Amino acid sequence: MMKTTAVRRPLCLPLSTILITASSLLLLSCSGQDSPRDEEESGELVQVKLALNWFPEAEHGGYYAALVHGLYRQGGLSVKILAGGPDAPVIQRVATGAVVFGLTNADGVLNARAAGANVVALLAPYQTNPRCIMVHQHSGITAIDQIADITLALSQRPAFSHYLRHKYPMEGVVIVPYHGGVSQFLLKPGFAQQAYVFSEPIIARRNGAQVRTLMVADTGFNPYASVLIATDQTVAQKPDLVAAMVRAAAAGWRQYLRAPEETNRHIHELNPEMDIEILAEGARISRDLVLDAAFPERIGHMTAVRWRALEAQMVAAEVLTPGSVNADSAYTNRFLP
Image (cartoon, rainbow, N blue to C red):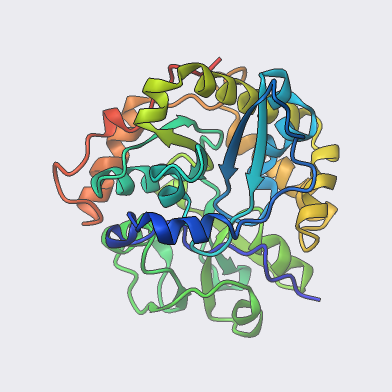
């Protein structure tokens, strides 16, 4: 049976919807799926919530590893992880205080700050963004700049799609909305689509397709992914809490990349459609995307060069208005080990 819930949908919301009313948010924040193995409440532990940007999968492995292996608890925290889904309102939840921490991508942080939601990136496990374009091997297309004369399923909202259409001519390409899943890809030899490298391509191969993945990061558009965020206010007023969360999450990612098996079993319990084989493959792929070859001992560090380049790319692609955001204020390495 073809898996459906693990496929990726766009994570960036239009600027007009970044901020929503507190009353609507309270209803949304109550709808998240709590992990059945969330750490037990204790008067000695600080209770916090972490909102995921998607259903539990390998992308969240380090955050779940910190839960499964008691690393949050060692830092004095009791963390409740809330599962996400399509258009999960992570930034709204964090910005309005419904949750203390959330996950998004770096371009989501810049979008949010431009809209007045002062969220800040604290830890960026994925140094290489897992976003890719999935094509059939027989197409002969081996790089994104060669995409031509095909139908391409691409979301209209995330920054990467605007960037690709801005940078490349895509002659003869018919762009259609991306609705998730791989059914159209399997049925149509002239079809390509956006994907996450450890999700849709694996599913398509299981269903007999010969797949080639073209990494968007290879075009130069490479926002940090699965970024841990909080508000500027939380960082200023509760630095000890933020430090404990960041340290535990970083340790969780080291644990997950070293030995993901126990964490993967837990993720599978939460999201049965992500089976153990897919999760194991996701953990294997994630290792190269998370670890910086130059500094393999560091997890989650960010640079001003990367953030400023992303801001410039989003301005060039007309995702951001010039001067609407300062990339230097969008992140901090202050709490990283």
